[in-house]
Image 1 (cartoon, rainbow, N blue to C red):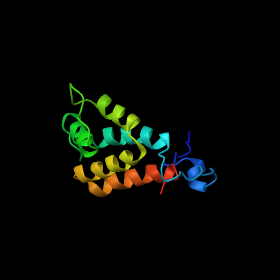
Image 2 (spheres, helix red, strand yellow; image 1 turned 90 degrees about the vertical axis):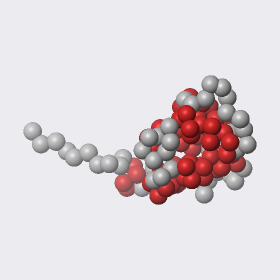
Image 3 (cartoon, one colour; image 1 turned 90 degrees about the horizontal axis):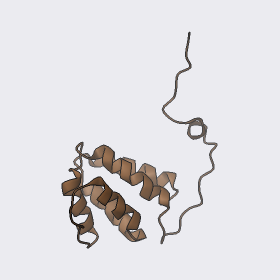
Length: 120
């Protein structure tokens, strides 16, 4: 039985038929970005980014906050992304790029998330 090949992208993305969300205002960050940054961090953790024990405190420090105790788990990073002010999300994204030894790959992933949310 011959099976149809499954493409890497969805039909709507391949053919550009999905409407883009309205462009976000400069002083807001759509929840989509906050939600999708967390799995991106998890994917790069140990593969370019340091582990959560090192990365968590570095992310908190990058926005001028003290990491909660005990430190070093992904839930702490998820909470930070959820609670960060809009401008802090941009600071956190820059910190991720700076902390990753696969700069182009993580920057590309972040740009893809921002583009999907229609954020400049």
